[in-house]
Image (cartoon, rainbow, N blue to C red):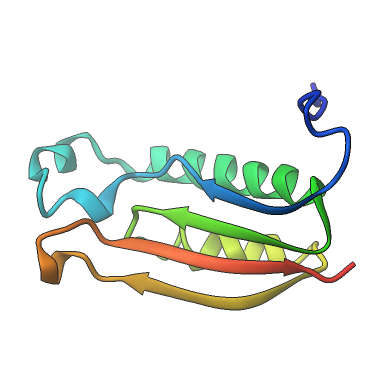
Length: 119
């Protein structure tokens, strides 16, 4: 069942930050016990959810609007994989994407991708 946009989104917006649910693998340097709960099936489910979230968020943007996609994952499937799947059916332009390596600084590692709505 397709849910409607929240009532506060009666008009399109200029920007959205989508800090999506993920495996949390970018936090494992400081929480290694979390690795014991990881499985590939769950990651695939998360990747599908991430794609649904950014597709829905992108609908809420004005033309020229920006979407910042964020995970605390080191896995390509949740990062570049989701972005590549998203780009197949969207009017998005990748402005920049990168891994922020927190493990070198005693912090979490994150993936960020800034997307712009072309039409």
